Image (cartoon, one colour):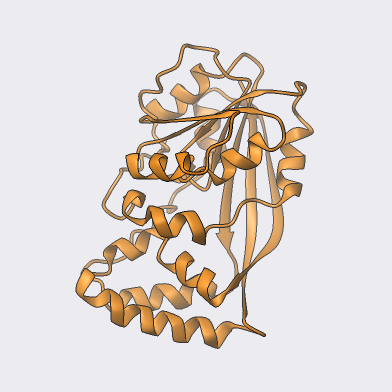
Length: 250
């Protein structure tokens, strides 16, 4: 199994404020797909790597009772600022989830699973899941040249190269090795749309922004703004994506 190590690049806590406003949720069709495999009207869901809580709120909006966990105290702080009655948040490592075995009907991870694809974490997620319950992994993958453009600007200022965190990343294999079965891979082609202000927040929410030195950020932001305006049509920037999901069962 591939092991991903937490690094300064993956320290999203430093990016929490931009992450909170710069990230988009998942399309309803993705959640419709998950819900087609859910039998309970109010399932108990563990949302691992919840970040600022955007996916947790989407799940709770459908009636689920959600517990969101993240390793970053700053992310959990930001999540609690927009909390809802049927969501609880806590700081927790994926390698030591603080719940009894078989606590949750569903385990989810949105745009985060590649940061903790180690054996211990994946088995922890399995143990807290009730027998027969689904695990739902969601990844957003850029298609086209959207990410290439802003990453090339980052590289002008970085003293170390951007890590390729998804090199060798195979969630199907990881889930199989952890003992999950009946794994289904589904692809949803979608687009996200940003105003110039929103896409600037997005640029500052991605992990590579951590590698731009503080003294270079102002200059980098000017180039990023030029890049955003160059891509915009009628003030709107499009990000083309494939949302790839893995649905497996304990």
